[in-house]
Image (cartoon, rainbow, N blue to C red; front, top):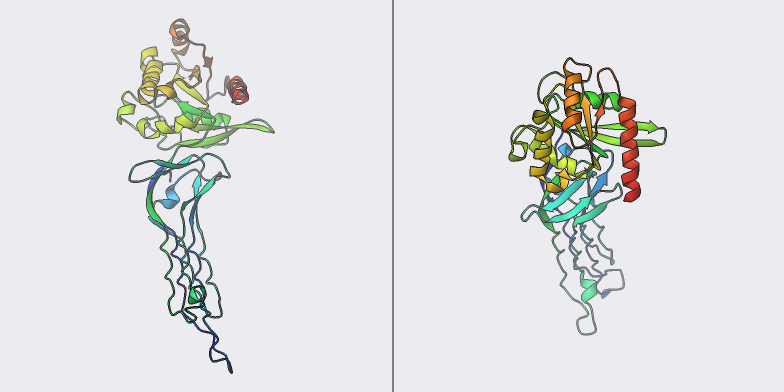
Length: 329
């Protein structure tokens, strides 16, 4: 199940206590203090995992606790440090403080990780307090408590291409034809209830990732339909692939989506866009295409995802555009 927002409580391990101990051995009645220090508490570490694409595994684990440090021992033995607790999350996860929503870390790369709360320092044993004046100290420290905080985790999928369009524009069909993804496909609105990711193979050593997002409707940025919940996932993409049903009137298709992107985020609306008219095999599509060519301010591609018409050219166009953008970056 897809989950892109969770709240979790994280607590690092408490430091172990130092102890009061004196060396006792036959024929050495006054061996002196030998109480060891306690071990440090474990940290809680958040780490990006490129093989994950949902936060669902954290939905039922509200409390994430690291291990406490062990107490010190006699004979100057230091307590064992507590084990760290590693929390793996998908690439694109934004870690925020729950109280003020300040960003603590944006995990964009596969090797990204950071310590979100640090373990407490171990308490000192009585050996540390021995000196010329106080040769038999009978005091030791308790371990320091580990840090704790509430976090708000928000996932923004990382994909090269984000598919947008009205419900029934054929986005899921396009994704299933050009990639290895197998999204649910049916002839009714909102077939896509959660994002689907697919890998498109251009050549053996060149691939790119496409994300199919739930269809947008008018007013999506205000919370209507499903689109507002998933518009944030387009923010990570390099290219917006706008799919239009070629049998749909111009105003009801292109302008609706463009307005929703603009209202949600002006920056998002400025992303590079490739426009594609799908379902060109259906009656009425040819007449509509002529109207689109006369009125649209940009060129577009024409395809039939069902019959796989025009898909090789679409893949080549996306690949070339991505190469250009990556070179510029």
